[in-house]
Amino acid sequence: MTYFIYILLNNVIPLSIMIALGVILYRAFKLDIRTLSKLNFYLFSPALVFKMLYESTLSMQLMMQTLLFFALHLVAMFLLVEFIMRVRGYQNSMITAMRNSVIFYNSANYALPLNQLVFVGDAFTLSIQIIIMMMQSLLPNTYGVYSVNAHKNDPRQTLRTILSLPVIYVIPLAFLMRWLHIPIPDPIYMPITYISNAFVCTALLTLGVQLGSMKWKLMFSDVMLSNVLRLLIGPAVGFGIVWLLGIHGTMAQALVLATSVPTSLSSALIAVEYDNEPEFASQVVFSSTIFSICTVTLVIYLIQFIA
Image (tube, rainbow, N blue to C red; front, side, top):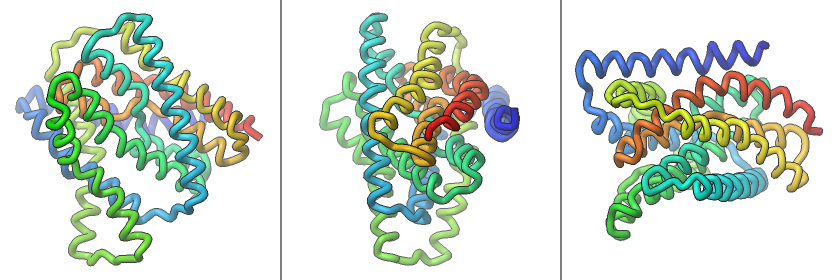
């Protein structure tokens, strides 16, 4: 019950309030969602990723183990959702939207505080979560952007779009500066901190603006399918992979917990930015966040049995 209340009070209610404010602001001022989306892609998200990676302490062994788990989980979920979409006969943009809603999950502003609650501020488990957050920041800005543009644009134009995104440069830069112990002067680091702190607020307001601007047509079966795959099947596959790899104890628990969180805001931001089923993507992000109150609590209970 403690976990349930914590998730409700510290994740779902604050997120819902920010989303509701976005809806209200759109209804009052008709905010331009394209501008908000570009601020997230080109300013706030890169600053957040850079700051977290620059400040982190990650060992090579831990990184390799975590990346192996992440890759296996990604491939397993990708194949599973592809099979289900073929069975259901999805077409065109809906294929990409469904796939992104399942394989991109909220590893930053939801999973990071959750990790620190469950493992009581453990630096080891925080490092695991930061590695997964890094990959979940990189993938939407590379594969995610490619997938929504591949059927619309010339491949060279799609590549140019990907190469214009700052996150793919920020990640290696942050690692390089940290490993070489290159200090950042305060007059430069303070703006980075201020901008990174604005990411969560702006991303959630953007989601609210999208929800407020769209013509609501409840896509119940598709939204619920995505929620089941993300919130229930995702962690179940995580359990199977840690067992397969022989990972035990705290590391196994942290890896499984990392896969249990709701759909990432990035999937909705990509959908809005590139007009790829934005109604579906926004509904999935919002509903999976609400349903995660119950599913994440269940996962937290179950990971206690990983020896």
